[in-house]
Length: 304
Length: 238
Image (cartoon, rainbow over all chains, first blue to last red; front, side, top):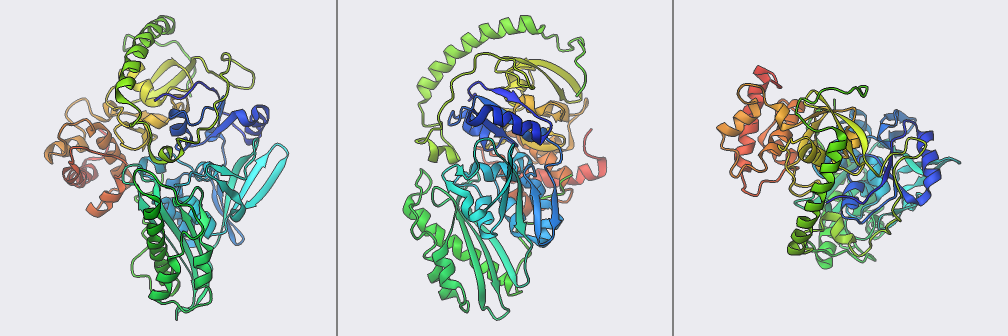
């Protein structure tokens, strides 16, 4: 499969990239790691006239702590997120999620900014981004703005990012005391995409009193979403297996699930509640300080 | 990147002009056979992952650009000079920006060790190393691979004998038809270089980027464990 013809530009600075995007408008697509865009271009689902490759811009692959947030540059690869000591200590949900993305080769090239901006309905990060109440920083030639996760995902492959804007940074909150997180995923066996992915963030007392809970779901509908019905049923309650099971039955409430050759809509709905339950239980156990096993996000190796 | 000097071509390839003409002729032939192939294959093989979900919502195609060359560092859509560092050698090519690294290797440099199988970043048969890390060459633009150290299976093997990983595949009967093997050897080697103490269980998850339809995974995992020990004592690359 060969993509349609395009003109190519690899700016060295963000300003240069923004100028190029300003010139080409919505005829341009941004290329970072290429693992979302290039497969779509090969299938001719996308045929941009201009490709602006931002992969050569320096200084966009940082992970650093800024007050109570961790700022992640858009060009940070999934492999870098998986192995970041800072993230594993202070925002373990993100490395756990990144370690479940695709496979080694995809994690070596794919970037957090690319994945989030692309907004594939079966991508992993969006579930965690929503559960974490992360913020996306986008820049254009006219300035910078910050979009909260709750507003960011609009529809299938559609975000709040406008033509001419580049997602430059993702900001996630530092883990609070009494907080546990988990990402549980049902993999498509060949592609590694999420048939269902559930990202849970639970703040609970040692006795299992749930103070707050956030549950992000991906793979189920046309965009990632917060399972607010589940959250409502759990917030302020004392956790029990039956309570969690009942609450998670609502994981796809109000959602029109996708269907494909691998998973029907009914099956996706059922799996949504199963994986929501697993994620909530795992996050709760960590919050209560009795996590049975070390983070499954254990990295396969050092980045560099 | 190194300057564009006109070095002798050690592989005896033609000059860009001759090559372009030859390419055009070859392309005609290719187009013909490709068309009849697609006719036979139908569309069932086209969609994967998100593609399957999106097929009915095709993003609108932009009108085709007229020709290459524009101010501000814009190149293409025609051929542009590209310099790649492959297996330690500088190779110069004229390629359209849309050419993938895998096609550059196989169709323009006669490095056919990396295989084209799924062509959509799933099966791993096209795996090469980019600065020592395993990547899918089918989903990396050749123009984007400039400035990186590219290693293919041809460059992994020493002049004499086999790389410890290849030897371990041999020892553990880790291949059957062998078509996926170069990709597996590249993925496994990069993996062991970053994780010198692999576990059997860890391998099950970490080598998920490569598929073997013959089902030789058991042998491959044993081979990686054996090669990890050899590579530790003898050192990685030959």
